[in-house]
Length: 427
Image (cartoon, one colour):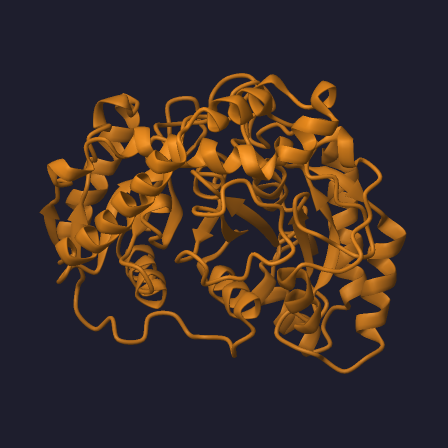
């Protein structure tokens, strides 16, 4: 067991609570003490009521276990609706907004015995305008975005689990920058009901944790299915597609060296590692991705732009105006092209267990005004493929660098199994 209860993983803490070795109240108090000590530097939370968190913990301690997260505190990104606390969507427009109902991910967490600890900082509407959160490894650096508070809170041992969302790279990138596991499911596998949309064609729910077992546990809770063990069926070394992508030169030198080294270590451990290049048909995918995103942003932000233009950032205003200029016919054509590319990549990866690729261009950017580029994330998001970042490396600034694994659509179980293989052999 960890010396401090707040350092326990969710899996460890749940077992300790079930055995009667610790109480949920003691666990939540330890997390609150960590938040009190570190929040002035990290600023991961936009809403936190310690009395409410402790009341939930005491309730859990007074009742029989209700599920696999019984008594475990969880952070929820501030674009996720919660009926018992505000949801501001990262915007001053909604500062006092109190949703009538919980999002599905909140409902499922509560049903599993989890405690809604509070709301973590999001960029404005989960878009590009950053919040106040700093990287817990060095407060001068960005935690990434848009799920900035969730990544920072988990990395800094404020909570063992947190919810994030990803439209471009908003789970994988901040998780990599903060040095935790981040998982983005196959599109629509995890319910997005009750979560603020940015671009409906790409929006995904995701989760963050400090262990792979916790990712698997939380994923099962979010899907409202029994916990699924990791690794069943991985009896032989996997076949890995090493995809540098057309953007390889945009990665920092350290990232390229570390991911190349990882590919070599995979091969040395017995994996069949094959260089994989995207077909030429993918060359224009970034441009059409932004066209679809902006078109849908313009519709998602219609009320905010019309009624509160003075209270939204220039980034959101620009997105609306650019999106309104995208012709409907082009939008539909782009959707059809993306669907064709999804079919093409699925066929091209037949026989491979996973893709190896960077989680981000490198370490977190210096300063809090830049949440980092989506260079190595958007492809897999718009192709609706599941992805996970593994906190395997440290860069020249002593900040985390992640390795990203991606699988074919609906191969999420296999993806987690391959991640386990990587942990065992090179982690």
